[in-house]
View 1 (cartoon, rainbow, N blue to C red):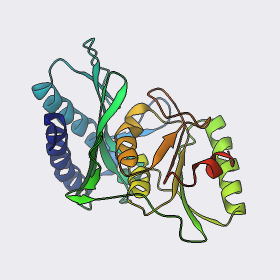
View 2 (view 1 turned 135 degrees about the horizontal axis):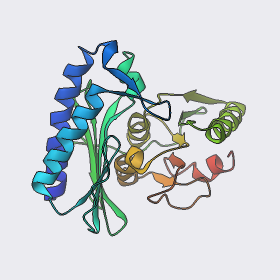
View 3 (view 1 turned 180 degrees about the horizontal axis):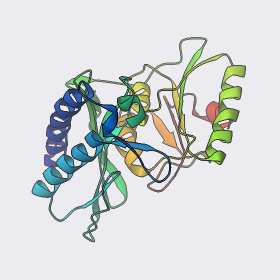
Length: 255
């Protein structure tokens, strides 16, 4: 049985799926802005953020909310929502289909649930601690290492250090005969590992709102998520190795 928090998060994700699909089909270049660190933001990012915050505050008025496009809402609670209204903004802005919405929930510093909406496929990935991972109503699980080639996804590199780290990872993955893809969208990449489409995802320079929801889904699908030191990923970690679990030690050795 879904918790009230999960039901509301899924409801919001479905609403944002419809909104972003409509915006994607009508986006104009004049709606794209550049933030201070060089990343871009669109009108759709901001509006989707507003909608999600408004909905969460309506149902959970005493909870903290940390989102990408608005200042943090701190209520002194042990319950915190992590929101990325449009992950993969560059893809969205330039007409590529790989973008998602993330709604993650943490209580007492433990990830409790995650919801990732995929507007153009009209899917909602979701998971709650101890209850498995799903896309809509279909249960998902990580891959079994059957193929000779590893399917790896890499993302990040917004800083010089991050770029150098990913260049090293890319080189090492190629040396072990891996197939490497870059979607530039954490939600797409984490749910790809969670649903068995990919075996590993490696990211640098991440914020918690980028990955909390996806990590919840990955772990419930049987996967593993750590930082580059091999420690269980926690709020505040800025890099992540997410795998089907079977290959984790091997991937860490490549970093």
